[in-house]
Length: 278
Ligand code: PMT
Image (cartoon, rainbow, N blue to C red):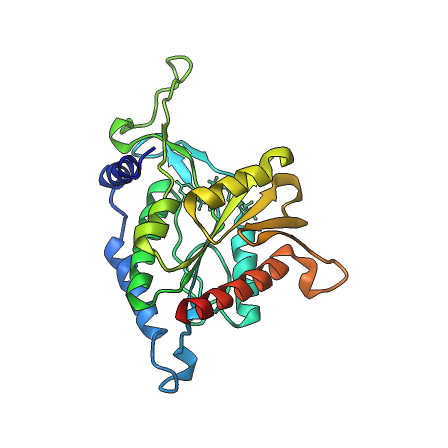
């Protein structure tokens, strides 16, 4: 598919999306958070943001409403654990103390949580965050651990009221959600360090799919997980080769796979920043 066609699909997705509830409030929070954490070094050390610190973690699943006044919806599998544990590990490493959305539990002015439920909310918020971060520096990290719906019911073809259950089986036609990774990389945040994720249930196709995503979307790495072993190990697929990252139950810190994963990713992000500036 040509990039013009993809861009048209993305524009029509956003044009037909219901506007974000409380968009002004979200923008205000985001801008306040960015301002608070952008003071120059020395002026207010607590609020000093280095490029390594700017991380947008997405976490959890997105829902696809079946009715505009939603009673029923389709969900995408994700407990939100990976994003939350990764954010905790970011803070532990101290080199990236900011996370932009999902359900992590830490907060002290260095963490902004922006909750979402639907695919519409998720993608509109991702665009807002990416473009806001672009204005304050180039090398932020996007750590896209959310499980984003691939199919949805376009808002204009969705019934307003609860679907009647008395009229037999339900036929629904789902449209494909345009992948936003390409526009994130090319327009929204072209200099950001971008980590995407791939979850499969069939381990035989996992690495192939992750490698294809790496090449297609030109992200810096793809974290590949198989559903049943995702808490034990992941494979970080990148142009420098594939690295298996495991948890180590004998070491308290490393008893979650995210700790070792974030250590590797933070290290690569730092190298990326150094290379971008040299
Ligand atoms: O939350 P847990 O229970 O701990 O589980 C974590 C996880 C296994 C869900 C997580 O680690 C994971 O792998 N998430 C991605 C799952 C997946 O394969 O997502 P996807 O196929 O919807 O998307 C792949 C990538 O494309 C993602 O980085 C996503 O941000 C991106 N995407 C997806 C859809 C879309 N329209 N645009 C996108 O850019």
